[in-house]
Length: 254
Image (cartoon, rainbow, N blue to C red; front, side, top):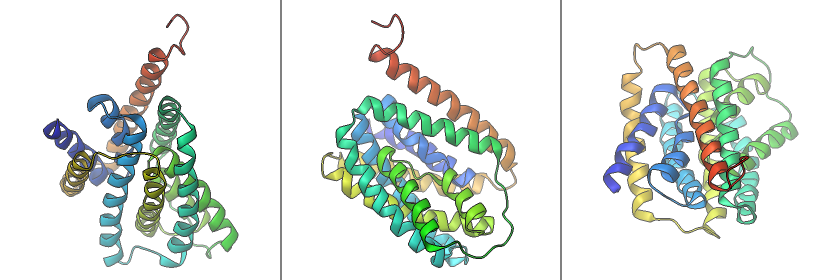
């Protein structure tokens, strides 16, 4: 099982490295459907994987000057509050409901990837209350379903905070690392982790991200992103169908 986990998790990292994001939304489906992990434990494990890979990426971007701490730190601080609230609230939701919510997030991510990234014109940093509100909302999403939400965060940082694309990507990794740490602490209050499986998945994903970054050189990002978006959309529909059929939510399923 651990060998299978390592192989599949490397694919998560490769997609992250090739696309600069999006791969984290594969973590929960892989853990649940390929490795048989309980949905709530899968979400908590995903927070570890997303947090570590984002932190590694944030350090690399910071060395290149692509992390805006003036925006990222307050955004992340507000997000940590939201992530803690979202992670705590999951104790009142069933694993099946969380899987369907996660599938909805996957559909939104696929739509964002198909739309593509838009470069923002330069503008001054937004007021503190707007940063806090945006960060809080995205933090709740992270805490609930275990995904970093970079596909939502990067547009927020470019279109609302006015950051150039490279700085938005680097800053988003810092925010995601902060959010996932708070969400994980909240989840650990009511969810147990398989530490050995979590370590294998995390290390394989980080290693895969370096491989993916090398593979991405010279490849058309737009085509990669669209192909991955179609795959994610199909996976989301499969996840909704599997969960609905298993619990009699579809007509004639009972």
